[in-house]
Every structure is written in structure tokens, then in C-alpha cells.
Image 1 (cartoon, one colour):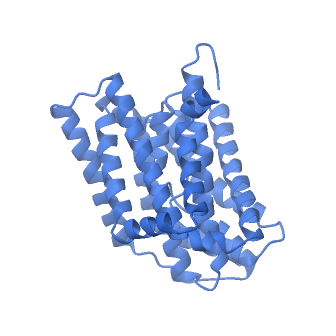
Image 2 (cartoon, rainbow, N blue to C red):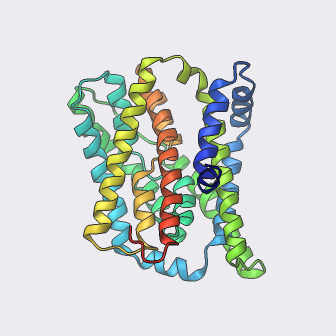
Amino acid sequence: MIDKIKEQWFLASLILSFLLITLDGTDTLAGLGIYLKDHHAPDVIIFIIFIVSGLLIDSEQVKTGLKDIQSTLLALSVILFFSPLAAVAISLIPMDTGIIIGLFIVSVMPSTLSSGVVMTGTAGGNMAHALFVTILSNFIAIFSIPLILNVMLKFLNQEKDLALDQTSIIVKLLFLVLLPLVTGMAVQAGFFKTGGLKKNRLGQINQCLIVGIVFISLGGAKQMLMGRGVDLFYILALSFLFHFILLAVSFLLVKIFQVQRGRRESIIFMGSQKTLALALMLQVTYFPEFGMALLVCVIHHIVHLMMDGYLCTWMKRTADTPGYSV
């Protein structure tokens, strides 16, 4: 059991964070999370994550990642087509309108800015390609979200005049992703050579930082999570189902198109993971009357991080096992 926990320490840390926050009757830990969130700690953590990511990426990864058009198209197909399609299919199950809208919002989101990149690297994939998919999908989202989401809302007889703050998204990508990434790569090229041991340690640092982001998110969401009773477990199951479908589709695509190890990981994690910040902004701005939608966004984010926390460690273990094929 101890060996299993050590092997899955990342998943165990995510679960522990959830338990500590939810079981703390004094709300001290939740208050700490809220304080850190209000003082821009998540942005600082994401900035550090991409500096560390820059230290982990070498020039060959960048060249290979940018040239891998097939993997890019497969990841984008999951993000832009299969994800909304899965949400519409699940919405056929009778459920609260707010839950459906929350699921629709999650489904049209681009890739998460940090965790998918970290998990791609942990699983043995090309982090440079994961970063490229992140940046590209977030730029595309500026135009795709209003179009796709309005079509989906017609199934509920709900229509919104959606307009995203394009400048804000671009500035965030530049300062939280590109700037620290280039800084990290420049430092590595100049004098910080990352050998195998250093890469392993840096990868663990990034995973710890992801746990920190989850802790802060849980702190801010505790009151909402604890006040929903049966709805919470229903949304947990729904979130698991939705993310499981996206993972299954991603694995099926890499199988059909015979995408090899080292390339498939970015398709699986970047195609199926969804950013939380933009989802929350969209819900609060355009759907404030549907409080359940906000709960779906938060719970799905926690669920998919836990699922992928296990998955990335499993993929790394199987990749390290001679003769084992995923």
C-alpha cells in the first residue's frame, strides 16, 4: 500500500487536498485558499509552472512539436468537435437545466493552461507540443465559443449574445504562458542544463504547483460544494462520465491513426482537459441565474485533474515497462 501511494503521490496529494479542505470544520484552510486566490497566487503559480516547463523543454522537442500537424489536428478535433458532441449526447439524460448549461460551458472550453502540459511531460510526452496546443486552442476559443455554444443552447431554447474579451485572453496568454516559457528556455540554453535527474525533480516541482492550484480552487469553492448535498454526487458522476468519454475518444483516435508514444500524450491530455478560469467567467457573466452551472464547472475541473493525475502516472509506468504497450 505504501509503495502504491508513493507511485501515485500526485493523485494522493490531490485527494488529500480535497479531504483537508472539505473536512476542516474551522474553515481555516478554505480561508487560506480564498486569501491566496484574492492575492493572485494562481497567476503567480502558473507563471512559475511555465518557467519550469521552459527549463524542461529542449530545442528538439520544439521542432518536433511544431511539425506534428497530425497530433495538433487530432487534439483540436477532440476540443472543438467531440467534446461538444459528447455534452449534447449526455444532455439527453433528464436533468436540471443549470447542470446542462454548466456541461455545455465546460465542453466548449479550450485546453487548460498548466495542468495538461505538466501531465503530458510526466507521462513522457512532448511538452512543447502540449504548449502549442494550449496556446492555439485558447486563441481559437475566442471565436469558437460564441459560435458553438449558441448552437448548443438552442437545444434548451436558450440563446445568448456572447462576446469574449479578446484582448484580455491574449494578454493572459502572453504574460502567463509565453513570457515565462521563453524565459525558462533561455535560462536552460544559457547555463542551466537539465539532465535526467534534474528533469525528474523539475517535473515533480510542477506537479506540486498543480496541487497548490487545486488547493486554492477548493478553498474558494468549499461553501458551494458543501451546500448541495445529493446534487454534488450527481454532478460528480456526470463529470466523471463526460471526461471518461473524452479520454476514450482520445485513446481511440491515437489508436486509429497509430500515433506513437511521445506524441500521443499531448493529444490525450490537451484534448480532454478544460480550463476553469474562462468557464467561470462565462458562467458568471452570461448565466448568473443558473447557479448549478457554476458547480458543474468547478467539480468537473477537480474530477478531471484527479482522473488524469492517476492516468499520467500509469502511462509513465507502462512506458517504463519493457515490452508493455498501451
